[in-house]
Length: 334
Ligand code: HPA
Ligand code: ZN
Figure 1 (cartoon, rainbow, N blue to C red):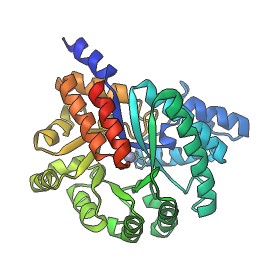
Figure 2 (cartoon, helix red, strand yellow):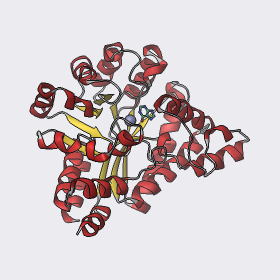
Figure 3 (cartoon, rainbow, N blue to C red):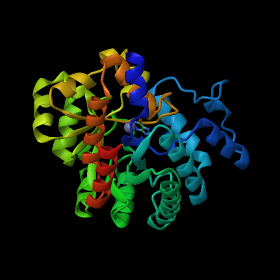
Figure 4 (cartoon, rainbow, N blue to C red):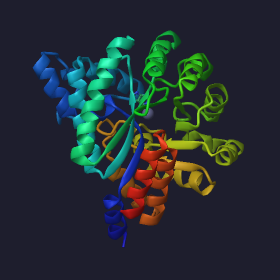
């Protein structure tokens, strides 16, 4: 019975809203580039070839070390293919990914345009070949500070269109406050971008309240620790704020000891719009297929429940109406 649930979960089409682009890089891909470019990255890999780090903060520095080999638009085009092949193999048909101008030209708008162009070309090719649709969300990096974030937000505002659809906020949640980035979010909103921010992963319920109040986001990256405040859960449910939940990431990083103790099912039962994503799949030893099958196994969620979550994600996607309609149609007919 469980096996059947898991098989059906694995086969379902999936929609992912929370994927850090460089965090999707398979370690072998990064090692290959390091070799080509004669960059010594031996310190960031385990003997078995996986990424090596001790905790979330060390993860952030290993992540940044890995980006050293992503030096040109062409490197990002190759990364696009590598990431989308992994996602498509999990049944993902639509993905929104966090892109950082910091790693794509250092926050310079003209350079950013070149990286973005290369990523989009590779994404178009993957859409034709693999049937997966990609859209981008610019994410300033919190621990680089508000001034550098403004440069990223400007890149986003200058390139906002039907492909570059949102602004987010990633990095170390314990550094700076959401209001320190209000200028960035105001600029992005003016440019027509949709808004999300990481909160309620390392920060408690107050961090979720602040992101909503100070940044005006309609989605929250993670947000799971809202569960510690029932009034906040009620408010999020009432306002239709969408949570980009990454269960495997949360368990791997020790926010919750096991998936069974993870609040995703309780949040959903409380009427919160929950979606499911991987965050940084090879870093956290997960895939979208694994997320879905683990949820089926742990919570007994059937194909109908998981499809409902996928539909919630499609409805919360930041893409234009026509793309969304075709996405919903694909889910309906699957
Ligand atoms: N969380 C926060 N910031 C990040 C992450 C993440 O998983 N990956 C890259 N930057
Ligand atoms: Zn994240």
